[in-house]
Image (cartoon, rainbow, N blue to C red):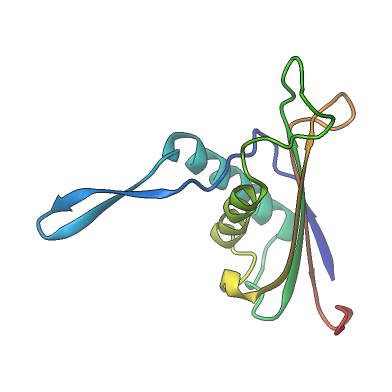
Length: 142
């Protein structure tokens, strides 16, 4: 089976978590980009729910995830592809967590294959993402 999910918006990386001190004996941990990450993950989760429909049981089997991200292009890009921050692995982590938030799978440990690429947005491809979930017996066993 294959499902395509198309969240719209500026892809945001899953930032690093920083230790900010202790409160009542517990560590205070803060993400360095919560203001933009939370809305992006919510957008991915909502697009996931819309694409999967109701009723939907989270996948509890091996899943492949293929992601193509389109980022805003600077006025004068240095290269034809965004070989600059944000890092592709951190963008992928935000997508995986957004898919989990949207109920795509029981746990992101079910993801056995992950392909993430980033490109500059243009007239044909607006800022956002295309995510493909693949699962079932048709997955190659290598």
